[in-house]
Every structure is written in C-alpha cells, then in structure tokens.
Image (cartoon, rainbow, N blue to C red; front, side):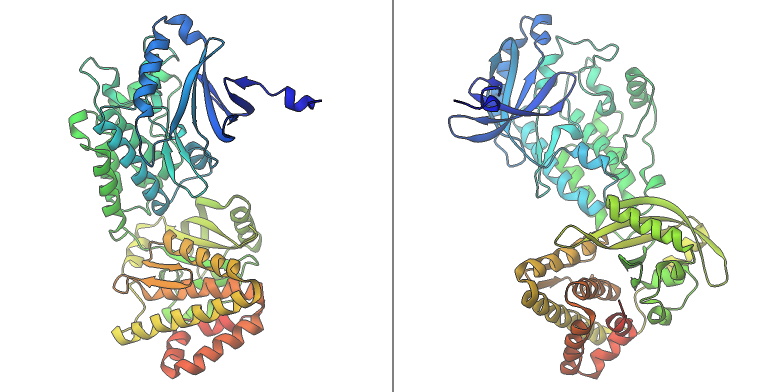
Length: 523
C-alpha cells in the first residue's frame, strides 16, 4: 500500500510537485520531477484569470513560449515543456538551485569583481536574444537565476508581451515592473532592445548599492521618476568605485533610447574597462583573524592613522581596537557582525590616531570562511569621509625601496612560502585544505582587484600590475589559515626552513613587510 505522502503529491501533467519555491503577481513556481526520466525541473504555473480576461491569451502564450524555447544559449534558462492544466498555463524549465539575483542583492551590495562575471553573462544572453528578434521586456534581478557556482541564467522571456492585452497600464497592474521600466517602454514609437539595456543599467545600480535608483509611494510615481529625474550618483554610496562606473550607469539609463548603449555587451565591456582603472582613492586595508588580532595592514592605513611605513611590524598581532583607536566592544561587535552575515557595508566609524585625533571613515568588512563554513577572520577596508585625508592617502604609493630585483625576490619568496604552507596542509588534511587556502587567497585577491590567482597550488601573477603589499596580504592570509589548522609552531618551523634555503636577501624583504612578526605571533 502506498504511503500517504506518496499519494498526496499533486501533479501537473507528467510532473510531480514537491514544493513551492517562488510566487509572484502572475504565477507560482514549484520544484517538481519529470516522471518519465526522473529529471528535477521547475514549473511556473500562471494565473487562470489571464485566460478569463483575454480569450486570445493562450494562443499568444503558446507562440511566445515556442519562440523562447528555441533560444539555445548557455545563459538562458532552458524551457523543456509547456501546456495547460485545469485552466492554468504552465512552463517547465531547468531547475537551478542557487536562487535568484534578487536573493543575492538582498544580502547586501556587491563588489565590482562579483558583479562583472554575472553582468557579462547576462549581457551576452540579452544580445543573443536580441539577435534573434526577442526582447525580454521585463528584465529584472528576479528573472536572473544563479547556480551554485554563481553562473547566471535569464528566464521569463516573452511573458510580459503575452500579458499586455490582459493587464492595463494603470494602478498596480503594469506590463513589466516599474522599478526597471525604460521611459520609452510605454511609448507609441515601438519597442526596441534598448528597454532591456535600460533595465540592465538599473540592475547594475542595484547590484552595487543594494537598492533600485528611484523610490516612490506608488508605481506611477516610480514611472514618473524614470521619465523625469536624473540618474542618482552611485559613487555617493560607493566612493570606492572607479569614476567611470557612474557614466556607464547613466548611459545605460539614458532617457532617450538612442543615447543608450547599442548592445548589452557594449555596456559589459565598458564596465570591464572601468574595473581596470585606478580607483579614485586607494583602500586602507586591515585584515584580522577571528580573535581580533591584526594579521595585515597596508601602508595606506598607516598613512591614514598618521603612522610611518616602518611601523607595519609594530601593529601585526595587536588587537584591532588598539590599532584603530576604537573601543574594544566596538571592534568585537564589528567582527562578530561580519562573521554572522558575511559582510557589512559603508559602516560609519570614528577612528582615533595616536594623538587622539578623530578620523571619520566608512568601513566595509567581508568575512573569510574555512572549509567547514566557519568564519576565521575579516577583511576590513576604510575610506575617509574627509577630503583632506583622502588627498593625503592618494599620495601613498607602493612600498618604498622596492626596485625590480627586490620585487622579483619578494614574488619568489611569496610563491615559495605558499608552496611550503600547501605541503603542510596536504599532509594534514589532503586536497580539501589546499583547495580551501586557494579559495581564501583568491577571494581576497578578487576583493581588492589584485592580479594574482592560485589554482591547485599554481600561482598566476601579472607581475607588472601586482603591488608589493598584495604579496604580503595574501601570504598573511595563508599563514593565518594554516596556523589555525596546523598550529603556529609547525608553521613557523616550516617557514623558517624556507628562509634558510632562500638566503638573507629574501629574509630581509620579509622583515621589511612585517612577516616575521606574523609568523611568530602567539595565538
């Protein structure tokens, strides 16, 4: 006899429903399995009232789904099937487990390095659909699905088009979503792909800030803002972004369609170029372990705090609150919050230098996680809200006294010590620990746009673009992780063995950057 749970599962055609995974104004989305081949799928079931309001809806729905089902692209969600059940049209699609881009945005603003691959994939998919004569019309983050590796997939092509006869452009029943609607979407001049590019510009603003550009109490108020208000300045909230990013968003969101980018790919290329530009003000960086002990600071932070570059050795291993001149409980709360939610963004903090002078900054913190998902530290970056302080740190360059030969030795020291750490990790925990260290280093490198990447222990470096403090920072992260896994004494012994092999010059460079203090810091 079948169990009650087995007989109670509802069905849509040949698909067995397991759970609802999404709900909107026009539809619900369910996770289901396809009985014939055991494939896990997502089923979007539309409101039956759409057919009641418009007798031609079902025919137009079938035509549009047939068109979009032929959009075969790596970043367009595959459509497997469609039909009607009990007066409800439905679409069967690939099931993607990572949630939507909206879900990711709700976690907080995204770094430019995180935005770039997602936006590039979206842009490529939009340009492909436009080349096939298909305009999305309702592009927005909730129509972008992310898999577990962070790849993006567009969905819901054509649904806005088949709905416009059943819904009126009044009140809350809008064709499309007001937050992303181009001014020309409701015009009589005809539709063009530029409405999708406008929505992509809105989405870019939202990814970088955590919210849409315009707010109003009614949908019509939002539409009027898109028609008449200037594009908000993204760098008001994100002064860390290159200046060109504001112009990129303004061009994508131009009021007139002809003033926007001709293709979504052109927008993505402009953003990639902007990401390579020097930032307006260099980051002041401080990395800490989960106990709140400093494992790295850069010379920009030292300058901001009124310290000399030679003092880097004196701050390694000291408590964060001591180095930043803030209350111990404030430092503890900051690190705990980063550990709990993964990141904090633009947190206003007053630092104090050794002379008790107050330095007002905006602090961004991002967590570092080990292979078990436990937080083991935080990467903190600071931007002064004072123009005078910003001007002072702009003059802070790369580490002094580093000629080409010194930089070559430092790079060699960096790769040799990473190799030694990896050997220890592999001996203790196998490939899993080595892969975790690679991930930790790559995350820190991507957050700071450093041209260094580690893959299966192999270090790839753009030596011309790599700054000396990047080697120091990443090695500090590797040491801190290895010390937590293996213990400080074994790590120190292994690293000193590398020192003996490499000679005095490399040891002097390590001393100059404060790595001696990091190795010998007590837990």
